[in-house]
Image (cartoon, rainbow, N blue to C red; front, side, top):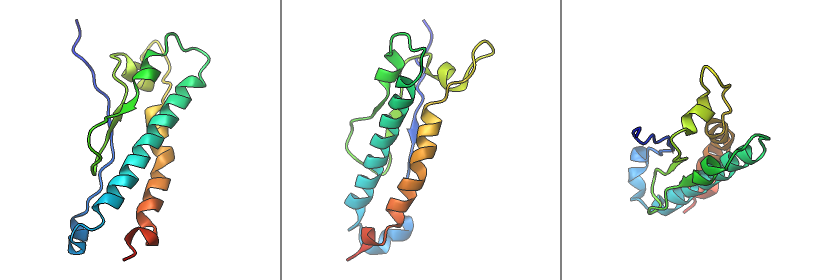
Length: 122
């Protein structure tokens, strides 16, 4: 049996420059990261739902945000062993990206949320 393949998208926030705020914004940043992760999950699943050729839906159903404690990074991704072949294609099959476009769609909203003046209002 083949080794399990894991494809994850990570979103990390470097807060080192914000240390002078005594970590009072940790929960706000963690919430923004969690919302972004959920949006990526939802969009990736929707992209796969819109395809006409979905066999069992196993890959779509395996896309999830790791339910661990909200933090400055979140794991998002499918768990089927053939997920990368769908995302990137093979020499026999064209790529049908779903994770990378979902991440690219969420990136501007994520950056805007972290740049929001209200985020760091005292």
